[in-house]
Image (cartoon, rainbow, N blue to C red):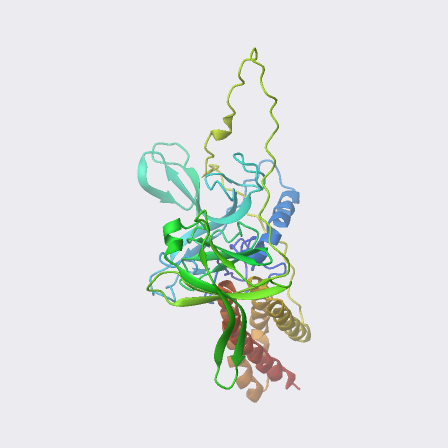
Length: 447
């Protein structure tokens, strides 16, 4: 999903990296200049904070008369929704002018997308737990087809504007089958890998709204699961030693591969061509344990009716859920934040720590979470920027480009982490750690 990750010194992000007032969807957020480009998209690590964020927001006292806070207005590309900035500008990908958008988090049924609520809970149709998703918040007027506003207010006929919540592309990166969720480099396809049994790998495919692809689309794909391969550093050639073809499942809802028995923790790669004319993409999965399907709540037990009993009236749960927001603004769910270290020495120590955290996540194969310490390292680098002016001229000449490289490579880590390609992640981490080392060296030369 791609979650937008952008902020300004006076803003924070909510549980999905949506701007709401200071920054980042990480547990520890920090400011960054709004000029930095937002790239990438992933909700994975943010999901752990969503419930805690809601509890924190609800715990804050407020008067009954106070209006709920509106999420701030951000800027996004109409063609590339992953691009989100804090200020107007142009898209770095297509150069189109950014347009305003108000982003927020809602809670959606993983099975029935029509059920969208403002708070966590259970799906009214199937009882499953709702999952957090990114939505755009707008207001409209009855009878005015093209009327769309970013603010609540009054329509021309005097009636209040009607709030609407619309799921964003890449707004839902929640695994639906207990597996690992990645976004393809084409930024449209999404896929989830599962290991339900030691000798079975299953691949679920989705569109940019996390809707399952139809069986005919899956049947046109060609791919394989590689469980063993050898890399020759001299020739830089990868030789596959054990590969198993992906084939449509019997029900047509996924692709499956009968693999050799996986010893846990198990690492494997999927190489798949999502369309006949598309390039082959690689996705690297690491399973610490076998995956399990989320269990649906048990159906209520209904006693059999005697012939003399009158039938009970039908349940009203089939009533479609409204996705309209209240006419007042929906509350913004804020991730609790902590300030950055105050001294230069503390900032440098924190930068080292974030680099180690990124490395640890990569070693575990948890690519979907590396954006968290990477973005924290980026924010530390930005916080060091004012200190550059106090360095000796020679150190300043090294620090300035190194600082920019830390920020740039942090975005690269975010982007490649979303796609789940271990080789690309390794390349991005090498560039990131080199940039961090150069920045640390420049400041260590300070008298």
